[in-house]
Amino acid sequence: MKSTSMERSSGSLYGWVLTTLCLPIAIPCLLFRILAMLREKRNTRSLNGKVVLITGASSGLGEALAHSFFLAGCKVVLAARRKEELERVRKDLLAIHTTVPTHPPIILPLDLSDLNSIAGKVQEVLEIHGAIDVLVNNGGVSVRGDALSTAIDVDIRIMLVNYFGTVAMTKACLPSMVARKEGRIVSISSVQGKFAIPHRSSYCASKHALQAFCDSLRAEVAKDNIKVTLISPGYIKTAMSVNALTGSGTPYGKMDAATEAGATAESTAKNIVKAITRDEKDVVMAPIAPRAAYWLRHLLPSVYFWVMRKRAEKLTA
Image 1 (cartoon, one colour):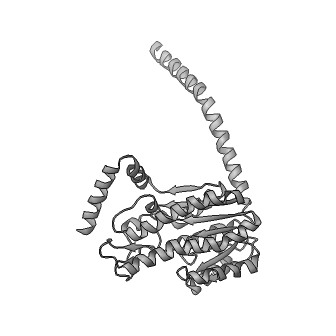
Image 2 (image 1 turned 30 degrees about the horizontal axis):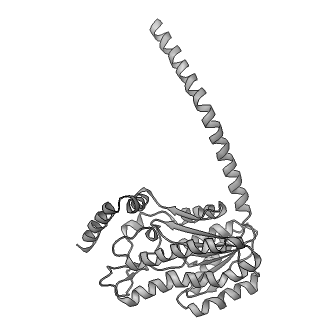
Image 3 (image 1 turned 90 degrees about the vertical axis):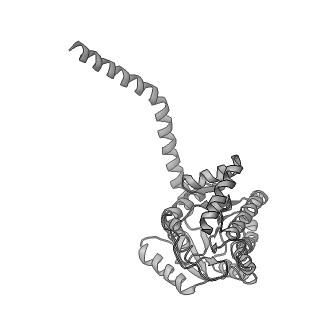
């Protein structure tokens, strides 16, 4: 009995000490979390009424982003090549979110590879809304093929859409933002813009280029109160791999296992909106393996090169 009583007393004492030690840490953490949530809600409300132009808005992540921004009360402009799909997304936004008090979405048929038409398309939006508060550069195309067998025309097309198309959109939107001393450029890159993997040379190159462009741009336009956010997601479960090109330029036409197991477009879109409201500059949204590869590339490059060589051999086999 004495032993049991002592054990209880010891347990109570242990619990009291643990509680006493943890409270000074737990309370500030809780307060910080509450303040962060309140700040996030306030920042999300600040999106209300903002004009948001989204490229690649006809499906996948672009479509999910349209829903997230529309729910935040934004005036959404849907841009992509397929007009009929843009019409579908527009109807879905109005049908699903019937209680959201915002402007009906505008559709903007747009081909990022037609660089000379982009400035005129942006001007159309400016004539309607008078401003573009947020440009989301989401449109792009992927590729599946080793560097040796990938036709140079495919390399050019990937770079044209993913890099030059994004740069052209950004440059078309910037003058009005600079004049107003307000705006945000958001570019959807990839973790493959942080480190390269085999059979993605063209795609990785386009995203590496986008990383450099955004880093330079961010510094240059800071004086004009223009923010630049680069998002680098991991695999997202969309039709990206299905619509990807092969080395010969034909459609890849199938869902990769890694893409199939990727994050949902909806959860990724919500996290992107959060990153914008928090004014984050360079965000990696990926599970632990891609994050580890990123650090491995910089801290232990010889190991990284060996891992990628083995991956290339496996893909070739």
